[in-house]
Length: 393
Image (spheres, rainbow, N blue to C red):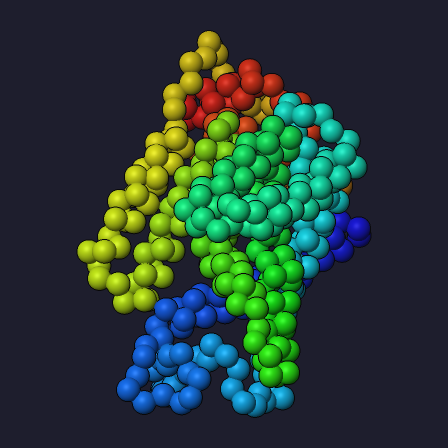
């Protein structure tokens, strides 16, 4: 019953996380695109910086942007903040349900670092907080923060460095999800600690008839742009646990670096296109993204493994799966974390094993992501036996 309740809790939190995350990302994309589409017009209201004409859903919209507040602000001024806050809250709850409550299976790999669950959880929480503090205090609020190219390089190094450390502490799945969680924490904290507080200070000053500190607006815009450029990489990090070729790669931290480059280049191309830049001026981003993608494909391409395994029988395979797989992958799992076989895969007979052989090869032979956290202690020799049998099918 506990596993049943945990499964439904996971479903509901994941659903909520997706809903509010879509709202936050959509708002980020929309406002960046809107800001870049503003144009000076021959006739504009006093105090208006620029306007944009939009069409959607069968209607036309004329949007104005003020650099300073108009003489009066309406009571129903809309603040875009709860999408970010709730994305973080639901994301942390999902992390707790999926990775903290099942730390031995999803977060810890004894072959990488033998941790107790409480140690892994403590490192996880500390890394989320530490990532934000380094980004905020040591980078953005230091002299580095006033040099955009240097800041971009430093943020890149921070994320890739964290990815390297995570791959030497957590399981493959746990490492990449923590890259996404750390970046997501930075993004949410940007909204909670910088963007909204600065906007409130600006609004209060304007309504009091005072000149607001221009640095507040500059800082808020900087963090908003950071969030926009980090969105595409963080989305892939958040779904990485579904892809063994990412989480099971021995140098997955390099894949993180390549994903950052791909995401940043694609986002920059789209942003500058929205701003009306000529294609010839921004096309340079696409070859860079393509090169990074080709490098990622080359890194993750299947590679033949030298083994000395002799003839393998069906009985040998059944013996291995009975020891290491069927506790989860059976009609009625005995593993405390599952009430049904993950992904519906039942591996209790040779026909089912043969049916799912390509998945077994990717998950248990090539990437070594299964069994989860290697709870059963499967050896490299046993993986090679499975690989040899699959190759002969």
